Length: 220
Picture 1 (tube, rainbow, N blue to C red):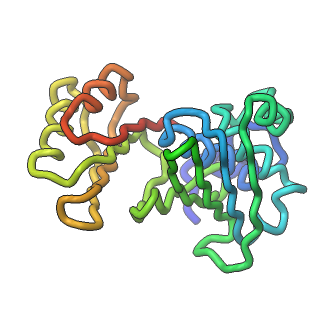
Picture 2 (picture 1 turned 90 degrees about the vertical axis):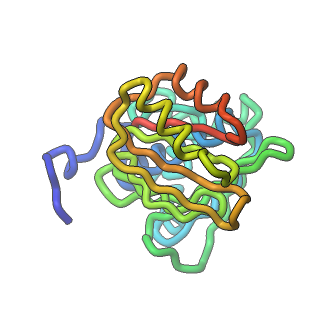
């Protein structure tokens, strides 16, 4: 593995004990919360590999919940995340999976509020770094190393150009864009990595475009 700085080795400022099992887990939870756009009332947490075997002892369970509550990795409330989630009405179910995942520190989060449901699969790859590999039915390769915006929308002519036009209007440079769809004319996904934090006003403008289902922004 290539390290760019000492922080890639020692990990981020965090509530320990492990950057892989706590900081990374917290960040996966935070991404899921951002995509869902509100605190979920029901969460099924499917743990794979090392996460399934050691999540209680390493604090992975607490860190995932902290991320779902919107906590940063160094939030002093992290040790009380379980208690706070219960107090705030979040129902959590941990499921230890026996099947193998592509990475040993993998978790699938299924977030629910009534009829609304989002499924996100992520892996903690070391030093607090993460990879998001699936959102609902879409395969991803998202690391969160750069600010990014995810746009879930109807697959239609002009959708990508309309979103890109808003970024251009606000002088936000797109470093990388990935688009995918399952069925022509059905649901599609854009992942845009950009050079700066995207203001909420810009996200709100994107949401006003026709046939936009969901918009989420990440800066990890």
